[in-house]
Image (cartoon, rainbow, N blue to C red; front, side):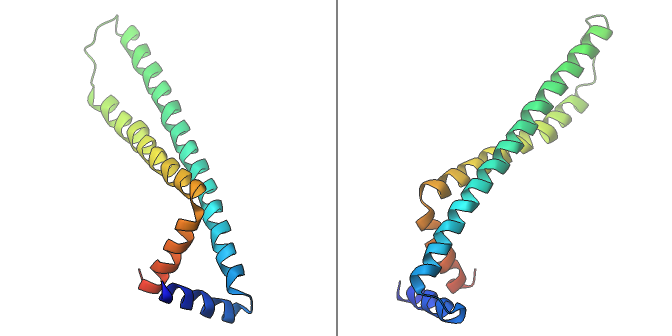
Length: 121
């Protein structure tokens, strides 16, 4: 923890501000990142839902067009669902959870950023 405080003091000295101000800025930035992650996650979830609805409608129309026969090539449907529904849906859920965690506890992410910078990760 001493390294973290030393890093904050060095950063504050370079910027010409107090160390408390630097930490406050990092906390606000962690909160802003949480909001951004949540919005991006929501957008990806909406993409997944819309793609799922479109794929379902196209598949049902194709089913009705072929006189209610399920002789249908399923590989393109499964491939479309994987790439257009599952992938953005999974990313959206991940981004929302990361965003909510940053909104709930921005201090943790500020300290984590400091420690990552010190550790060189």
